[in-house]
Length: 112
Length: 116
Image 1: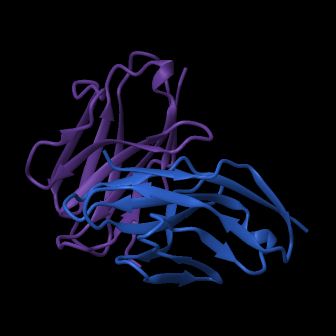
Image 2: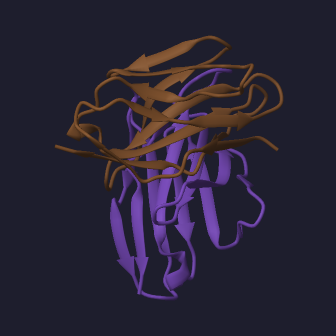
């Protein structure tokens, strides 16, 4: 079945460092790909998405490119801030299904 | 974006009692709603998918008699944890999306259930 694998955390970085969180997926068909962010004690918020190969999703300085050839959707940010500390989930939604499948989540902590 | 409101945000109940969690879409009609369960420091596990006016579809391993889901209107779905036990303590999150092939799903803020 469909699945999402993302790098295990926790990830700890200093402010203004470069961030990469790896995500790969397995799916039949042509899924849509998402990154969600969860701040402490809150539900999930959609951070960015891409619906087809080579699309780049971007929001709040974060970017991720849908790479079909490597089945990847890595999340990047050039300069992280303390306020980016949260748990990040990579996810997919298959083109034939309505449900979203999540990766295990990566906890990110940014030091001032 | 659209707003999904979940209530209550936290609840403590005694073993053996039932707890109802509400999920409302405030500014759109949610044809489909999803209920997830999240254990500490783990990912979201889909429990069930519900479509307005029909029975929920439960994921494998989820007891439908224990986790009762009702989606009686296009703006409200409820999850009732019946005869709760301490192992049911968890963070429950709902998600709602409107009709359409590529519509976004919006998430509630979650409900932390503690069974004592």
